[in-house]
Image (cartoon, rainbow, N blue to C red):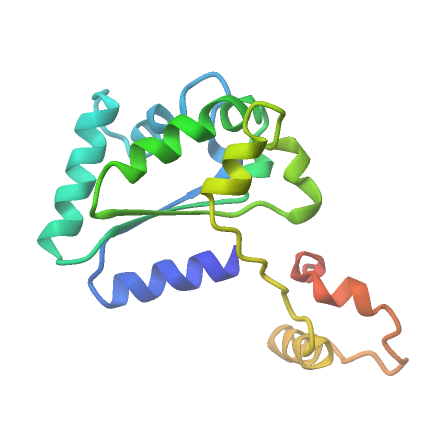
Length: 171
């Protein structure tokens, strides 16, 4: 989530088109693009009208409009991803000025991947593993503690795996 938010903020600061959505806000009873349109508060329009507008937006800025959807595994009814991810990705690919990034926790991929979409996901979607704080776990915990005014633990941090996944850093 922090990575996606940082990218979105950077694009905003550089006057580049960006849309950032969060998986937990998707209604499992509506198609993916209809969810996006609704979340943006737009009047109902067709998928093509929506994507064409985003494509034009990217073209006007001489770049691609980046559509980011964080934590698709957190959608209450992941059926929309299970059944809709192929169509959605193919729709995005048909517009030269659109780019798509989605995130899913590796331990929850099974919520999205089915027999019907597994081959497509494996062959058509580029997967990049985000290793969290791997290699800098202690520094990450120290920074976190300092930012929140919490005392850094005095006992050895033997819970290596816990600090690799930044999802545990909350109070």
